[in-house]
Length: 275
Image (cartoon, rainbow, N blue to C red; front, side, top):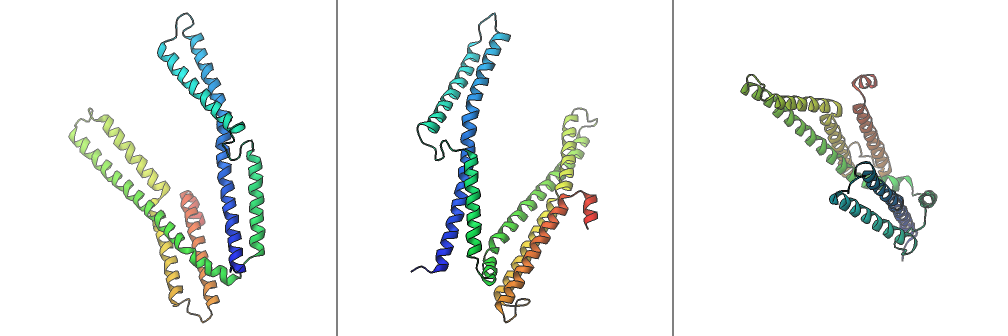
């Protein structure tokens, strides 16, 4: 027999599924409307271009067979695609939201989100339960931080190796070709590559981003381990107090990580003012 807590959880999960389904339906409907409107327009533009070529270029002669074949194939495919989409929309009932506007789906999504908020507020669990579930949601966040850290670290290493190789190649090509007239194009390309890599590394700062993400992930994992083992600073007799301290500490770390990312996105002068 299901308990009230289990029933409430199932209802909230079903609300999330309905919201995700509506979002996907809105994306699909946008593509369908784009095809319904865009395919006839593309067909009309193709026919107009075909006629314009005949009038302005081959008015007194026959249009080449290859040109006629290409435009005929494009026009035929566009007409077939337009017919198939109109049939699916108005007659075939193939699409789930046929003859439904995106505006109506957005309204349904807003109502579903509002209903989910009201149900969540009505069945809000105690703060201790929310803090305990917050601890269980942290491992995916740590994995995400580590993945982003590895991404920026690899990007930094790639940029550095490209910088090393191109810088060394400039000296090697200059020494090999003296005067460097036969390799002038190669030197220009290598110099351009060095400039672009140096500017990109200074602007995007992948090394700093990788370090900050890795540091935040390690700190969160350290605090999660300390809470799990019941060691300082989470060795209080009251478990609720430990969970509250843990949630407060981790949220502070995440806020600090977001602040560091914002500082890296700012120009150098702006970073100095923030610091």
